[in-house]
Image 1 (spheres, rainbow, N blue to C red):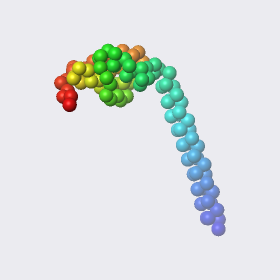
Image 2: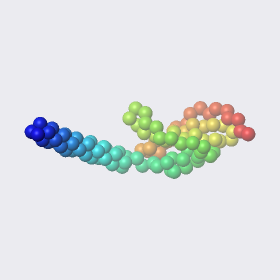
Image 3: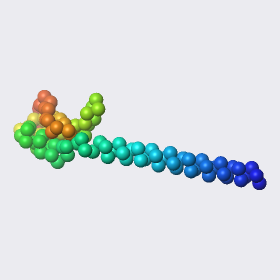
Image 4: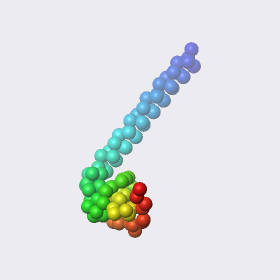
Length: 106
């Protein structure tokens, strides 16, 4: 009976300590996610608007990309039968164009 009680107490301590660790980890992740939000000044809609106006076309796809610690919007624009890849920085809104490629339109 004593072994059962010791085992039960050990299991209860394990559950309590594990829940504390999980709660602390969740709290740390929440702090990181909220801390990252203010530096993003350009949202998806604004990035699409910037890309469409600079490329003089219509956006057909958009994704968020992180490269070398910097985040940006990767937007594909169809302009005058050409596929233009536009990268918009999330912090500044600066747009960068990739070389246009021929795109068949049917």
